[in-house]
Length: 367
Image (cartoon, rainbow, N blue to C red; front, side, top):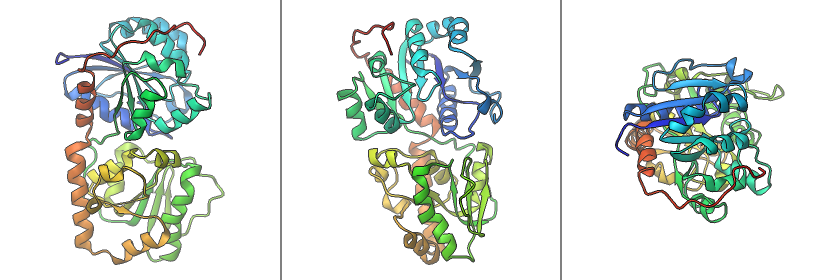
């Protein structure tokens, strides 16, 4: 597969990063594929909540197309899907089960699933409550790409019937994420959409330190936070931060906080794009603890924190020299291994291996 490939992605969103982490993940991967010389098309369901918050309308690294219904997808993009060398469907695609069956009926090239929400998917499949992927559809895919590595890959094959499961983590674009030279404004910041299962950790690792350190400045950027949260006076709120502003946001922090969803902690090996973005911008990271973190960042390149006092000790006690050395080591690790170009190479390499034996399945069977 050294030739130029025609690759089609169907994902939750590429055009809008509002309220989701999928868009930035797809952007990094697709840009990397474009840089490798491949032709990429992204098909996105045209929904109002993303249409009203688009921050990438005309990408220069792929063709971005929209469809309003599954019938329109089938009618207007059948030839595109049929002629593609590789077709990839992402998690949380609206009416994903129907979309998968439609694409399977046309796809003649490699057919892949990209799960950006693997622990959530596995939990929903186990409860028979996943509306974007059916258990019976998993053997359709030549490769099941997973945002989660580690033991989860074995589970996908052994328990769920994947032919192959490969890690495909998020990535960073060094051209967009780098030190901007903006002056430091906040001692600690956090970027993330509200999630109920992250809020207790955010309280412990940012809001409580802010209450204990009224002379320090903090910031939380992200949408959908409930109106009843009581924010300390020294915590600035930013409702939505477009990807174009992420580099300046990280560059203005002495430290940035990473908080992981409970399902991702339980699965382990599920790095957030916030980790890679912050590191590429030269901002030291304070992260909650989860299995596999040390496979992405050695202890010398990241702080772990489990409670309020851990954060206070870091903010009060660490020298500037140590802070900057930690940031430099994290940045070097990310630029070497976690860029969009690196992910694109991993993606193509995974698909150069011989095709796994197909299992019998009936596209027309019930979802």
